Length: 99
Image 1 (cartoon, helix red, strand yellow):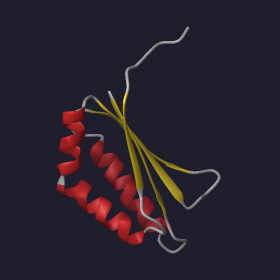
Image 2 (tube, rainbow, N blue to C red):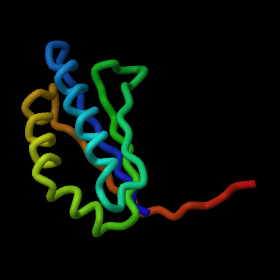
Image 3 (cartoon, helix red, strand yellow):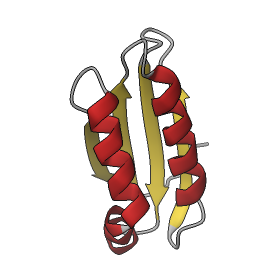
Image 4 (cartoon, one colour):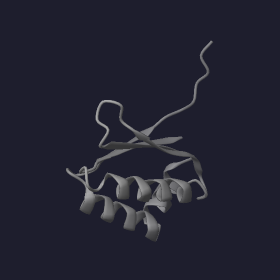
């Protein structure tokens, strides 16, 4: 499984648009092949920061996601609206049951 953690910090006047675009991106991404989950969260300590947590079945499906026209457009627009450059981290993980 591949886990992606990305974040964007909005400006006060762009938060609403970034949140709307992020929700559209998240909802669309959930329907892509290989998407296990795709969520967006508001940071409790910095309410201008939106964090995306995604789980993908494998690197190939994530690579395909990054090539989707709408995904590219979302990243471009988020960069334009953000207070600082968005961040992204990608991890390879395996599920484990505890207990």
